[in-house]
Structure formats: structure tokens, C-alpha cells
Image 1: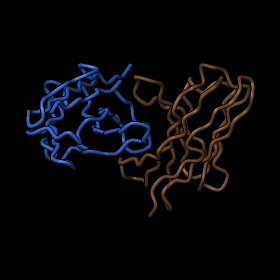
Image 2 (image 1 turned 120 degrees about the vertical axis):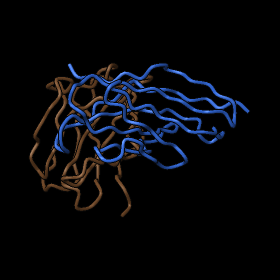
Image 3 (image 1 turned 90 degrees about the horizontal axis):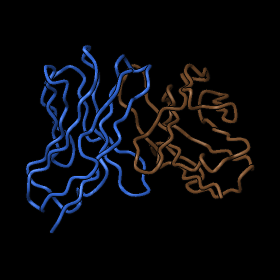
Image 4 (image 1 turned 30 degrees about the vertical axis):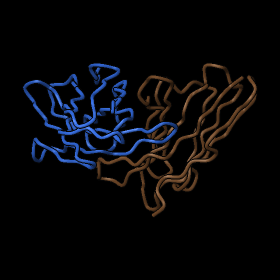
Length: 114
Length: 113
């Protein structure tokens, strides 16, 4: 079955440090890839998406992600963490065009330490 | 554009009762999705509509669950004879074909006591 794996259910970084959240997917066919952020008791907000254009994708709030086909990965990074980045982050994959549902990873909770 | 709206935001119900949630997608979005999210997990797909047609249902959607989108606009998700295991956040999302981007609502948090 197709799946999405997020390594690390909880990541803690110091304010100003690099943020790296990992996402791997299981497929030989390049999918559509997304990162969403969820704040407590809120819905999901789209951070960025990869749809077979540039492999390095820039999103909102200074986040970016790089699609690496050979590694089947789509890791999320931010050069300098801010306290407001503390939230739950979900990687999601769609293997066909828009008429198939998103498959989500289990999420990674990011904590930012002052 | 007011985004995807879900009502209610919170619902507490006794086991065995029926509940119904509503989702209003972004206007003109023809695709509508329902997901369920339990604590510490990512959202899991429940069902999907294109216009008023329900095109796909997950095996997670037991016979106690039913979803409708009668006029291709808002959608309802009904859970009959609720069980404690139904306690979760129910998320609605919409998109406009052929875009791959789905916009999510704030969710309805269901607690079955």
C-alpha cells in the first residue's frame, strides 16, 4: 500500500536554529507532495506544494522543501526557527491528479525553545 | 472568499446518539473531502465528492456513517449510534479541479461520552 512516513514524531529546536522535518513516501511514480501546518484546535494550512515543476519549493513563513526522486523524500526546512513555528506539521501525498484523496503522514510536532 | 466553514466546531454527545456535521466549501469548489483525525495521528480519508456525486469511500466509513452533498455545494456527515471510538476531529476540505491544492476547514471536534 502507498504510504507516507514522517521520521520523528517530535522535533525540538532552539530559536534561530535550523528546522529539518523529514518525509519519505513509498512509490516509484513521482507524486504530488504537500506540507501542511496545524496549530492547536485548528484546521490544516498549506505551507507548500510540489507539482513536478522545480524540485526546490518555497512556501510561506520562510519554509522550503526539496523533492528528491532518488531518495523518495520531500524534507521540510527553515533556516532559522521562530517561536511562532511551534506546531504540528504534516506531509501529504497525492499519487494521481486531483481526483484522488491526500494521504497524510502521522505528523511531526515541532517545539521551539527560547 | 471566506474559506471552508465547518459547523459545529465542537460537539459532545452521549454514546448511541446520532450527530450531523456540516461543511460549506469555498464557493465554486467542485471537490469536497471528509477526513478524520485522531489524537497524535494524521488525517485519514473518509469520503470524497465531485459536485453532488460521492465518488469514493474509505473502508473507515462504516455503515453508521453517511455523507451527502445534495446540491453540489455544502455537505453533511452523519454518524448514527455514536461510539466512543468515533471521538475525533472531523475535517472537511475542498478543491477546484484540476488543481491539486486542497483547502481545509477548522474541523469539528467530536467527543462521545
